[in-house]
Length: 292
Length: 304
Image (cartoon, rainbow over the protein chains, first blue to last red):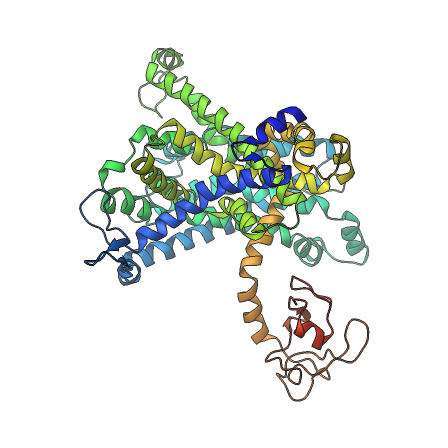
């Protein structure tokens, strides 16, 4: 294997030392495919759009006398704040993400706590059960919710069969369906960090509390909750941050009233500015997102 | 093991029903004879027959598998290298940038990374004619996006691994890269490959914390400023003549007298008060460190 490693290091520029190679390879990848794309976006953000290929003016131009000029256009940024649509979309995504995170916390905390307090031989299988939905394609799981929530879907049929309601509930394509979909998709991300902090917690603290006369609720509020705070914060961030940028769930489950920044970005990018030439086909689109 | 009562198990069962209900409904209704998705008209496997005859879907599935396997392999290589670098190389030029780039995809909306990569590919295609948008670009994007998850797992495993194990891999310890790669690819990489998803999700101990650390690191300055303004003065703990809300710290770490920060020419004291805790500013080995008689340090820390 050492011979193989030496072979990898042999480049046209001579032999690179091992340390430099180990650092350099991922560094180069990240710079080319992570940093440079952002530089490109930054560059485009400062130029104005034109009907041409590429559909924006070059940032660096040459003046009449052949000198380099830098054409910075901050209009896009002023436009961002002058058009209320973006601000509203952003705020509503933040609200959606916050509601999702809080709901995930309320649903996920008891689940994580129960798994953490279960018998040790039960913990791994239960945790596996939480993780396993990820083995199914994300799109299929969201489509499943369409089948459940729509006008003559499973939920409405079931409730009508029970006699709880006469008219089918209108859940699909509303804010509610977006919440349901997002909570569903992000719940495991909340449970796992919560579980890992709750599992490490010392049960004897709770026994001490109950010996000293604390009722279970009080013991929970004064011991368990503060001790699990790192898990709560980590889980909330894990849910909140991707949820702000979520655009596939609002696109599939949401209606005209669900405006999220991810959806706005998508529309803006593929319909308004850059033009349709770049737009991937529908198949390509679902391919991209099914493996996440 | 203590008694948990009825509430927790009920919540767990309901939660798992919530997670599995939609999946089960899809599986059950895949045996539906009706063309309508949610109207049951009898058991049949005709959709499975239709699936086996649909070349478009089958070739799409094949392509998905190819993309998944190549991007998993690529992400494993890039992610293992980055995780190794983060765990073992404490100092090199641009480490902060590197750590930021490795971790950023974890906390970034996918759409932003996707769009910026698309723009890069379009630009590259105009410049050098590579890569054509298609399978290659999807694989590259996936590698970039998922390498972060591998890196976090590998890093956390390596931090827990005894560094002396690495000595057995090659002759001299200085030859870090070549002597270590095979061993660690075997020890950590293979595990990470086989159970990547399960690991990331089942052992989020480190990843959650790292994420948390990253975010709090970013927000730290702002939060400290915010909290500093709200910190209340502690009685009998004030030094007359400045700020008012800074607790008195007039001994250095060896117990010697410290000069007044203002007298020492500092416009603000080198600490912040957060609640009842003091955090001391990072301090380079320079005149400030000398005048305050502080050991140089690179982070905000709670001990002086």
